Length: 390
Ligand SMILES: Cc1ncc(COP(=O)(O)O)c(C=O)c1O
Image 1: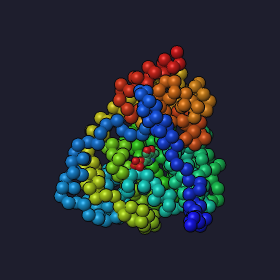
Image 2: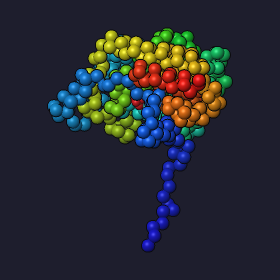
Image 3: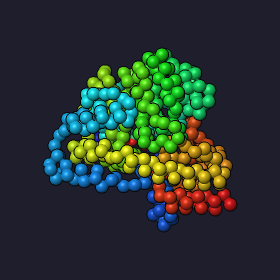
Image 4: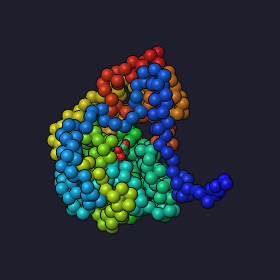
């Protein structure tokens, strides 16, 4: 007898939630490679170096020593102590061990943050272009993302622009610096403007500082360090970029009450914490000398300068990004639709990029190139672009 499935349906709140468009690019690249083409991959978002050995050994040691059992779902105490220390010295965020929580990557922290503060019908202000999953994390709570164009906000005044997009339902601002995909690093004055606006309108700030260590011009300012902000900011960090630990899924979030109660519940019921051996690797990673981080930043800067010079040389107009590891040139000379421009470059130059409209309407007309690749790959990419534009 045939089974009737009419009662089976998905939760409606997922209807508006999309699935990463970057997967589409990745699949196309794999297809071309399988056909024997040498594709230059500039579409990814992973550091160019491997996880440092001492971090890997810390996880191995933890495994061998049977650190394989449940840890507190918020994270091991020594890890949270090390995080408190790091936040105080590097970010000027004063927190207690009860105000930090380990998360399964930065994405998990962001998921928990949005779930903690947004209700159906709420609005969240999001500077755009934005890292693609943010819109889905907001709609996943049945709230609405309101996109604030970063370029015009910086030109016309951050506070004034945020005011224009504000609605009576606005509850939160997503504040990412350095930004993915544009590489924008907000200045201290801009951070102060966002903070003043959040205080004036009584909003929560969800800060995403995934690229805090990759600032080439200017300074990284943690918005939670500004006066009156620690109590209204949930700041999400990740080990993915600084320590090249993308696959380890290691991150953490800092916030005060009442947010911590909510974050603890969400972490408990979504993952029950970060795998215990990974937490030992995180403790080791936090011991990395600042000089090592600075050396890698210089390596990224070298890559940025090489790529940006090459892009401008071939006519893909690109101001040097101040942070993160992406160049976001205007690609209208290839095609005014970034989707088509990316397809053309992939097919004709075998260079894989991400269409700017994946990062919101304000990204249209641009392509995202990740320069977290080898110098040789950047040189090959520029050669391929020169031939394409010749
Ligand atoms: C802006 C931004 N935030 C957060 C993340 C989260 O990274 P992960 O989940 O690997 O820690 C990323 C990763 O690409 C990112 O680009």
